[in-house]
Length: 452
Image 1: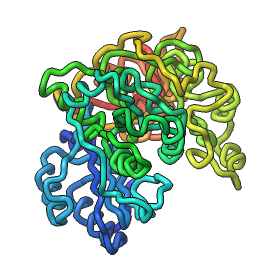
Image 2: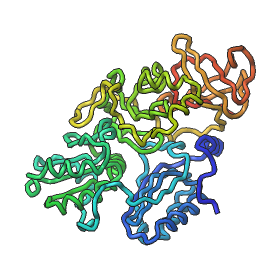
Image 3: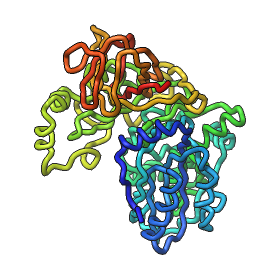
Image 4: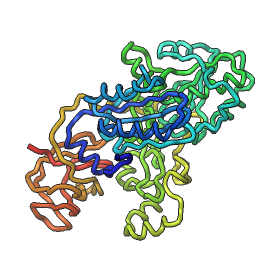
């Protein structure tokens, strides 16, 4: 019985595009006593793999924490796999504000010590004695109370691009760091203030609210369902958003817009921007904010040092990383001397610029297309794009689609084609191709051929 991924992310992306089905991005969590997390994990994998469900899921003796992508047509069947377990009957599924078919490209279910790394000893306090859940309108009302202190229990790279107005935004990289900091900072207000907290989907506050009640705070509240559910209720009830900016999410989208306000800056040039990226150098993989101009100039890199590395032969890049911890095991998310405009801690409550609202992906008309490859470079002066062909042939006269989170969907007919430096009419798998594109492309863009 298959209990692991057999397809690469690239292969899965092609299958998703070829299927042409609408997918939903959603998240949920539940605290419960799970006696055998390994068996629980295996049973879920078998059930969800059969439904083409993808995502990143953590299970532990204390419960489950899941962020997932599923075909819309399988939603009810997916709910049925949850209803098998008493503790997940009627569970709330937080649907993403902005859906993306490629939000997850693998099904990964891991057994962990805890579903959220909080650093707490649960035996020392009652984890079920949680703070009062507040819906969006109730949350807005209590924020207007001058006796309220609101705390963002997310990390610095999350709050930098979006947060509730007037919130305390700890300059931390992990949830566990924020707990003692806030406890010390607010120790003189345990009885006279409303301690109101929020996070992305509610799971961090569920445990944090119980912890702070144990620490002696009398009036503890939490945003039910987190920022994701808050946005949904705003739309349903026509409420004012007291959250400004973008909500950081832990999937390939790296964020979903709550309001049009851009409150952060490109970490390299200072231009108003709230688009996160990961450094193209696999030996760095730094998470930081980068605007389109810097992305093109720096080729998705965080520094000139990393830019030099990605142009080295691959064998040399691998040799440099051999024996070293790389990627997200060691980097400080968004913390680097090379990033001159990084902000954290005390953050602004006013916008630096306004963002254009992206089209609702769910409203896009599905077109039949096949993935050809990904963007390699854009020559600004010549207005020429470079791609590597990884699947299928490409011919002059083909109708193509260049698609990406910032570029959107741009269709055009291929009139001229250069392969490996020579003009030709056909490109094969493995070829590096260049052709004129009358708009700037990004390294996150993908090239498709539209099938008639």
